[in-house]
Length: 329
Image (cartoon, rainbow, N blue to C red; front, top):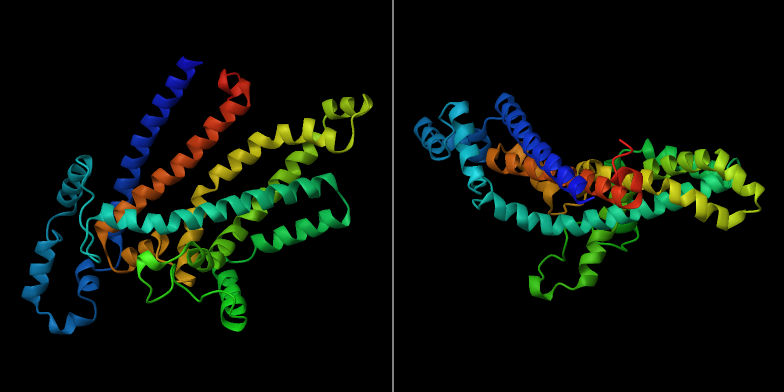
């Protein structure tokens, strides 16, 4: 068992290094091909008052006057030493900007991830247990509707309904405006996070519910469940003993694999609600040509998604001994 675990960890480490190297190269190439001029985006509205000499000085200060290959290898060498560069927008180290923004996004994504997983799994189990009945058709209709609904449109709808018309929640931001950081309470953070978390979670409920429903239907139609019914098992006992245990691994795998969709949805949700997290920082870095910050955010998102997939594999090995012993690929 220990040997298999060490081999698993080593293989995952090699894959992570190769993934980060590929993501770094591809992201840098895409940024270079982007029509956005980093110098012009950095100057912004003052571009009419900035002369050619000043533009050259700005480009030289940020190293934008050097060949792309030289800039990439210089950035990569600094990254290997733990230096992700300095953000052109915030004038702070990229690692510090990401750490501050991650603190705001972590709670939002964790709440949305838990809500989507629990609600989606419960809805899928209920629909499968009542297959063909009204509640099953209602769950499927709701899931198909949610799956075809753009997250940003849903966010705008929730914002107009619960923040503008009803006034139950704040319009935006992660904390009340004009309040010192040490005076912000947990209730304030939860009120500001409620609508973005709901928007982000709704997008993940549909795939979890539909996947769980189909897997549970397949399990309940299997031969060993038919044999269990012949022995007299039925109802909740049959569902818990043979149904939920066998769909646990697919549900967990799907839930942790949704980290990529979670991060992508956070970009839209944070833009709609002006939530100062990683998603909003990614949009700002892309639109304003902040190359160091954008590359840092891309690498962090790659590690975030890779960590989700790795956790899914680890939990699968803990749940199913066949995977742990290498008998199931």
